[in-house]
Image (tube, rainbow, N blue to C red):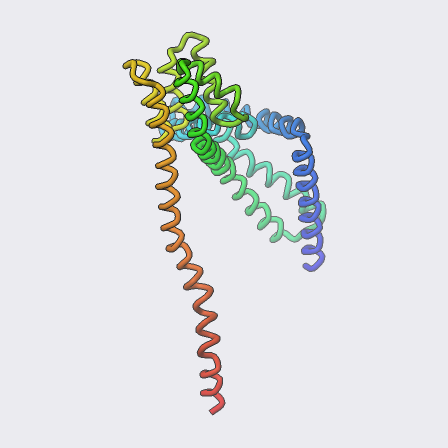
Length: 292
């Protein structure tokens, strides 16, 4: 049993070293290997994803699940698992656990680990990899939406300055693309310009941004800008109001989170701090009572 534990610890150390090496390579700019790995993963998922896509026509529940995943894929910018589709993300929930079991069981047999350790390890990693595709996609979508909401007010201020200088809204969007760093705002505005270039109206392209981001703030901002184009109202005033709206919503959200912090702190206070205080205060009295 001790030998099994030692071998398992050695395997964990080797895995940690490999992951650390990959992390260093990524930080040093070797992202091509990561993209190639993502492409390889997608090639494994592709056959199962094709079957899932065909099945959705006959299974309403599967169709609803894929529609939900498609919204998350759009919100994440299509960058999760190097551009995995909703069907591929759904397929990964079943393929990844099978791959984990197919790897762990032979490795356990190779190192002659006990059956209990192999089964526990296989069950643990299978459960983790079953939950990872959807949870990872949700995290990627939430992070991109958060960054978009954070960076949008500054971009709206730049657009307002261009509009006040006599430029139209499309030229203001192009100016933001030129001066803004790479990120969700720049990606979405670049997509607006691309849609306008192929014949889509600017108002429709702005509404598409609100649909892709899917938040109340984005819907209010881009729907208002689209209406200002259709009704001929002042674009500069609407841009200023939109920036103020998002900043106000961010302040309200921060205040709400600060109020929740008091409630969240009460649980560790009750479970960890107060028992220690009671022990320090009453332990001497209990000891004296026992000695008597």
